[in-house]
Image (tube, rainbow, N blue to C red; front, top):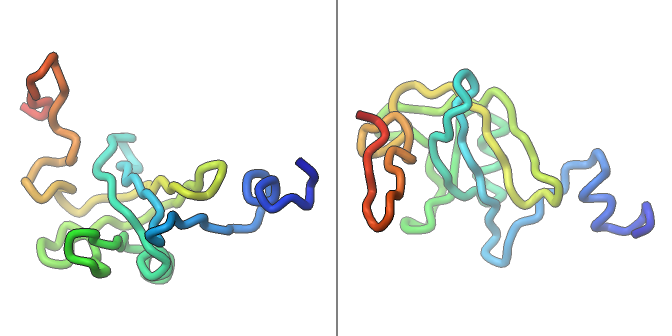
Length: 126
C-alpha cells in the first residue's frame, strides 16, 4: 500500500473516517471506564455518532425500532462517554463510559451477565 492509498490512510492516518457497513452502521462496544467491564454492544449510524459526540452521552441506532435512541432515555441509566477508541479500519468503536446505573435492560450491571458452559448459560453476576 502506498501512503496515498485510502485504506492505508484510514488504517494509519490521523483523520477520523468512520467506515459504516452496507446498512450504515458501526459496531460500538460500551466499556466501564473505571473497571474495564464490557457493558453492552450496540450499533451507531452517523446520526447516533454525531449526537454522542455533541452531547457526551451514548446514542445508538436501534435496529429493531429503526430509530435513534439515547441509552437511558427512559430508565435514566445513561452512559457518559469519557473516551471513544476507534479500531484500525474505523468500522468499530469502543466507548469508555461512566454508567449511571445498570447498563442492561434486565437490571444487570452488564448485558454480558451469563457465561456459556457446554450448552448451558450460567449467570456470572450472582
